[in-house]
Length: 150
Image (cartoon, rainbow, N blue to C red):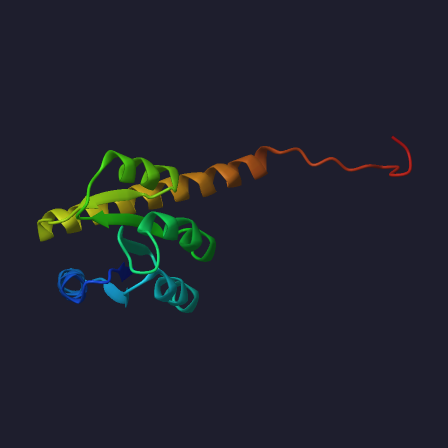
């Protein structure tokens, strides 16, 4: 099944390059140049992976993470930054980013990281679903013969 990637970056050349790399690897690509467009795209399309620049014209990429999580809870969210700092990394982790990739990047390494992060998140989600199903089966069902009395 083909995954859809939302590229959120205000640099048209970066968007063009990422689109080319991702489409060449078999991904479907949606793009947004700011946070508002990203939220709009997430409301319109099912998105599997978000590549989010940390510096956007209307918001920080780290602030956008929680808004995107509300709209697309299962979307894998990866921060892209050319401005790495401990502070940005901590904020990204606290806001539940699934990954953190530095610019400039090697296209092959980028694709490997995206796949690795996506597969890990998918495995985590499937394990959680499996655990829920197992617990459903192990939960005793109690029927009250006389519901008016305890």
